[in-house]
Length: 276
Image (cartoon, rainbow, N blue to C red):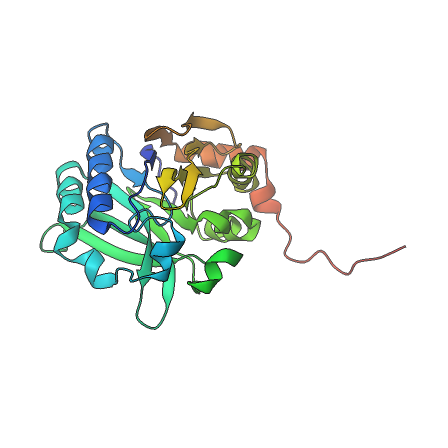
């Protein structure tokens, strides 16, 4: 697979989500997409369950289905995608009919579609955290989005705690790993360690978007960031609303993987274990 050589400008966005108010959260998504697109951002990542709000009462009630996220209600986001060319990656709780999932919505320019905007629900969170299992089922496949020739793996929060999840994206050709997350107070150390480690493990970029502010009965701590292929933060937010913006440099991925060769020298089989 050939590797793109053009830099890709990305943003990890964060804001508070309104619990159970899909239209309000779509408006916030559109506003952040406009802000990102006007700064030349090509990919905007927003938090886990942002469109519904991350809240137990919301999860236990009626959730949007695919038709709610592909129809006219999405028009504010479509308008900004058409206007700026930004691709939006955002989390939502979703009623798929036979099952409920924590999913990723991708809204992107697409000349093959009549209105010029493609809408996709390609990924369901594969590692569902214990409290979430009373409402949601795990997804059964990985997914990536390709923008300007750069492949980017999709993940949701707890997925990023499993090195093999990011490894699968890397092995498939991803030069970056897009993480939509929602961390509670007390989780900052783990959040900052996990995603920097996934970048270093695989010699690729990680774009982490964290929910912030209050949502229903819970509060969240933000911490959105973009990490380079050695795990250094290139841009980072605290708990404020905003965008953490940086560039993915494909050639730096290649150079980093040549210098730190864990990506190439991974062993699938370490043999039997000897105990003494």
